[in-house]
Image 1: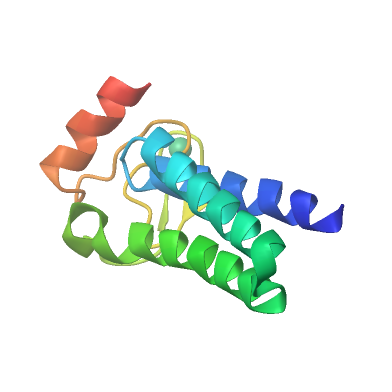
Image 2: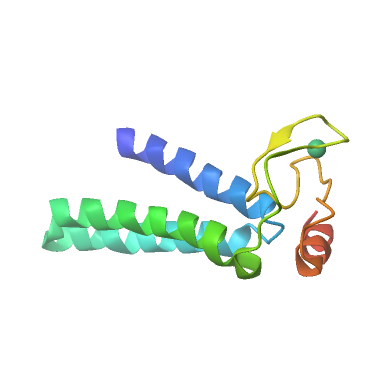
Length: 117
Ligand SMILES: [Zn+2]
């Protein structure tokens, strides 16, 4: 089923984003999957196409929430290159995937990611 592949990709992106935002991945991945599952059941129970749209809006909502509201929507000044691994990160990324924390990231993003890894 094609939708499952999209779901795996989308949930992977949410997990990655949570990591870049310096927050724990599990609650966001769990919320995305739980909401999707509930809306899938609602689709089967009669919502049909509306349920399909709603469950993808839910996934998109979780993703947008991560960018907009984690750590108060904190951003660093601009696109930046990690001094450790040379990876380019966007302004929404507070913690590079290699674990390097941008000096402009809020303190709670730093302590969180240290606990998470
Ligand atoms: Zn890096």
